[in-house]
Length: 522
Image 1 (spheres, rainbow, N blue to C red):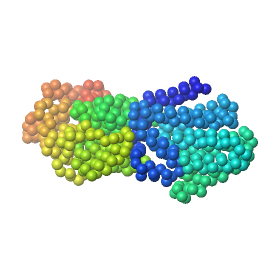
Image 2: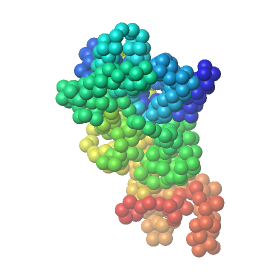
Image 3: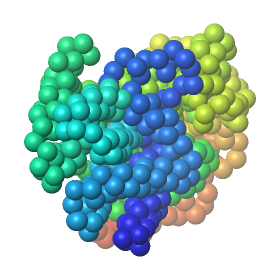
Image 4: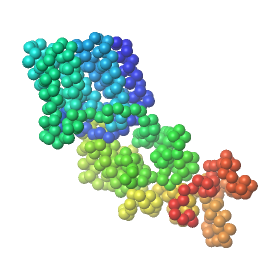
């Protein structure tokens, strides 16, 4: 039995540590536990205070590498010991062990859910452990029944829905030893949550299931991979975030959220235009997260990453606030940390200190200065122009107009123009802002776009525009390849399949076959 237990628990640990760690990081980020008297006191206003308090406390340690797998494995081991100890009193040992082991595997599956509370596992383990106080209290059957009733009431008060497991163990014990007064005690105790539902302002279902999570869950590998990309960016590994985002698009197909982090990861390395067309999802919608009724709160919070890196603190704060407000119970530690960073950058000391006091009361989020704070502070806009969060281009342009060069904002603005096929705005923006950051050769995709505009200007006799384009350095190799593309396009009658092997990653090919135009293309 010991060997089988170790194998099962070891398998659970390996699953969460190797295959499914990012869900646990996200679970921790969506929870706050403050070491504060007032905060802790609120746990006692609901049933299951011990389970919720203990579960939320240990959830903090999911922040560390391997912490989530370790915490879950320890809790499941305690559940296995407590449940086996309660069942072996009434059942053959091998039956008790098999039932306890199946229960642990089932509880492990429930923990796959991103937002499954560890309080639920603590509640079950506590309910099984409470049975030890019942079974070893030797006295006459009426007093024994009263003890069972009292223990179930106490269990509900301390553990929440775990009292139901205690009731099941008492029923199994009473059937095994023909103690017919005990079932009456269980029935009476089962009515206690119903009586207290009004006091706790619960409906009947919540009264009996408080502190529990989803009843069944299977792995969601798409979410795990998306969380992997998000967490890589969050922990500062931009290169890995971009590489994984590209690899997962090849696995799942074009995806705007993978594309968002692919572009953002490249932008953090000043390589956005060089890699723009490598993503299977080539669209302006892959540059930023739109805020709409269909955007879940996690992705709203992810939208903050771009605007904070770019220095647009107004929109970044808006995204972070939405991510915090719509998170479960509005307790998103990750968003609180971002709000503290944002207000530190903008010099809002009172607001920063409010969030900082919260972070100081968390074990894993003690305040530390953000390493990129000074760099970001240099590119904050001089004027806080009011724009809507869905006016993506307006936000980019607002940041590009900054007195100090903001290469990230300028690249995003120019790439937005290219992805929407708006070549005239691209030329205007390149003329107005591009010179701030590009004194030598332009990125290849910008050169390719300029050749299209130059050819069009020559064709329509617009010498002024053509002379303007000639001011930009374009490599001879790019011009030769543009000539080859035009020849191949004419020879193949614009056959996409024939052109793609050689020209599939060029802007000329994108503009002909892949562009998703927004409005009228100039």
